[in-house]
Length: 390
Ligand SMILES: [Zn+2]
Image 1 (spheres, rainbow, N blue to C red):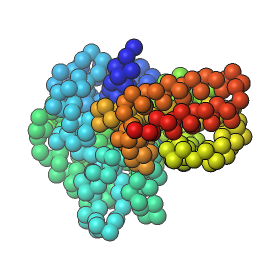
Image 2: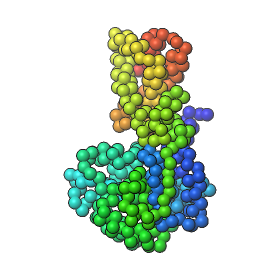
Image 3: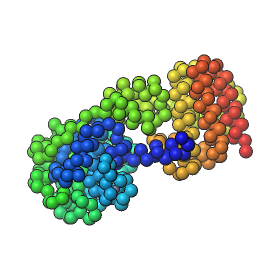
Image 4: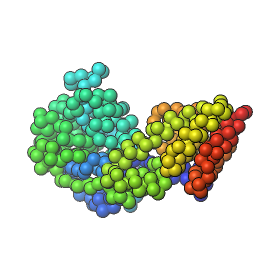
């Protein structure tokens, strides 16, 4: 298959707000689709599952499906106005509610979800399986207590008093209702029990036992189990260039928690970024003494690490290639990584990046064949260095 075509398929699979982007959970998806098609959607549902399960992505995919204008048999169309808005988390018929905390900019009554939508959207696009603590870190508010306030409850009641603008349903999505302040929860009891027509409440919880029982008892519960190993492994390989051994290791350690799996891979690659950056700089400077020294360090790494590092370097080059072709990004990358690959894409032609990809893929295979890693690495560095010449 052509390389660019592969990239485009991978990019579509990355749209997190659709059933297709979530591996596994077949019977739950079928059940949700069935209730949507037969118009038997319960007015208040509680999706609950362990951290790193697909409870929030499934609820978001369900919301996209419910309001899609051209539903397919097994998913939202992904193209209509409603789908595009659902994908961007800007749907006018969906009220997105999540725990927040005071910041320098927002205090008191202003500490409501609507003022934090922008960071929440970025958070969900970057960490669709993230937890409350990841969200706090994203907000730069780690030391403050998250909560869903009474003020927020008032906003919810007001939002559901309006009719749906364009979708079939008005939907209130509450991520982590365990953070509902007791006064907020009490204020919502009546509206959750008897919402206005065509209004749905979708609560997504990690600890349903911590959700006030008066709220919980008013919802229909859907248990979302952890990912199966097979589904988790598929999700991982769509996002990261891992070989079979790495995939098996991470899958084993993650134990069905996709959030944990992503973190395991990212922590492992973080050191590689620094190494990759310094390697590229030495190649560019064609600093032979330093390159010889670095080849020695490379040789000291374990075979698995050498392979992982080259796989990581390949991943970065593909990112650079994609960025320079389409201005979109294929994979999850930190801002720093993205900035660096962008610069690489600016300095190098597509032909040169493709050449590097071929050389690195070959080197990756040679390591298996017990070629002297020091010579392999030095040879590779010199070839790369030469291509920097105009
Ligand atoms: Zn649609």
